[in-house]
Image (cartoon, rainbow, N blue to C red):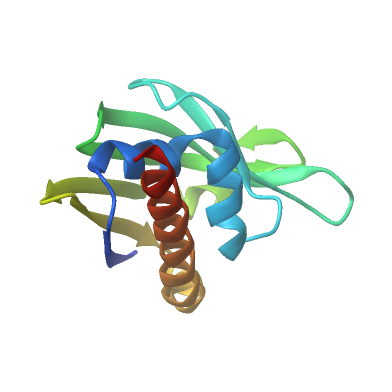
Length: 155
């Protein structure tokens, strides 16, 4: 697996960035960069199972199943991918699912003078490196727009 790193500075308080990233409605918006209709099912609570899903051509949902390894609000969240979701069913044993198993996604948040720095570290199969290299910056840019809009209306 390859490890990719992405960083964005967002002109919004850390809690605004955190909540914008994880709230179900805004999550659907900023993750469109990966796949229209992307969403999650589950909880961001430490120890919880969470599924990252997108609709397929046949209206079923596929994606990844993960465990929230660590969740320190407004600071850090770490996910460990356990496998795939295919047509709505968790798959942790097939060769396809094992390609993702054990991969981590880590999100680190820090704030200085009202500006939040978000660092994303993603383990990925080499097959997806180019896609993530293109999609993550677009997704984070949209996340930044949403968080800055929220911060502006909160004043």
